[in-house]
Length: 234
Image (cartoon, rainbow, N blue to C red):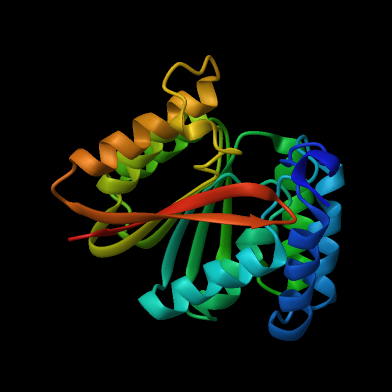
């Protein structure tokens, strides 16, 4: 079945049936998604952006990155129902700490219920408000540096979130920016979509920063054609 014949859910790009089948195959044999994670994923329908959470295999990937990096302090821009947050919280372990920034109180309420159900609420701090402002407050408070940052919030503000991440991390930290391919729209420099401009701007900022080394990966699957940037502070 061609991509043009497939359909997409709200907040997802078109995904061919074979892409989705491959995601299901690997998720079933490799991803340990327990009842709490399944419930958190499904509760995304109760948020302001249904179906916008990462796929199960992507959540597991984020958890692996945290484990490989040896990260114990994680900052997340964009919580929604807390599905990715749970993966991150489990990866940092009992001694770890997650700070997740969410604009909408409705989403934060859903997420915090999911954190309790997953048994990780004690290692997660949810801060409600515009992430540009709440991250600036973290900077002014001089919080302990983070080892890993996941940027998955409103795309036009990506450059501001990257700058905050640089101020809130130290050398060796990993920064991941999600949804950077956008069904291929990233290469359209004439796009009128502010989300595309936000991604292009953050890519330019990463490329121009002497403190970062990075690459980008395209992904296809149940979330359609998208991808992420993975950067590391030198």
